[in-house]
Image 1 (spheres, rainbow, N blue to C red):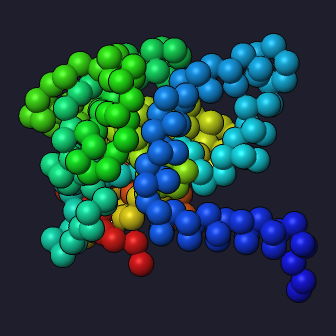
Image 2: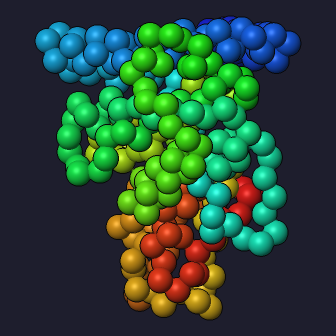
Length: 267
């Protein structure tokens, strides 16, 4: 089968860009910094065009220009993992926070805008430059955040986890370059909501997947409504999982009263 020249060209451009970022990570850091500066304004412009010009414009724009370039990468909290699991540096939120100079919390743009739930709004976590995360280097943006202790940030993460929120690192131009940690709900989050409703490619799976111990699972179904990605269902008294839908967020594991669910590394 012969590929279309346009497809081949796009693949070549993506490969060249990936190679450049690998050789010059500072470029990715600059691009992440720039996106952190314009993200809210960009979303406001897209919403305005969607409201007054074309309701499908935002979705088409995301699919065409931002596929795998901007969005949220799901990252578990760091609990409910199988005993044999070992982490790489960017695979769980606790580890990211502990290695960074995380120091500030700001207001969630999406939840403040849509107000579709009663979850707290001060849930966006600013990371300092020690770990290479660039938002802290944008002076005007840091003014909208409140400096807090790392212990307070851990409390925010724990509370978000108990509420069933999804931890995401918001990235650009690849998942390796993120500029803020968000704790997201599927009803308000621009990335999650549009992904579930329209299939926009703005959410990246974590490096983990759920594992349900059938000997412990009673089929109670408590995990089913908890799953933000609709990967679980009770069929004939037993929980069934669609692996392709599991994003490895770990929310279901928190809700299981029997402790039957854990996270394991994806094969």
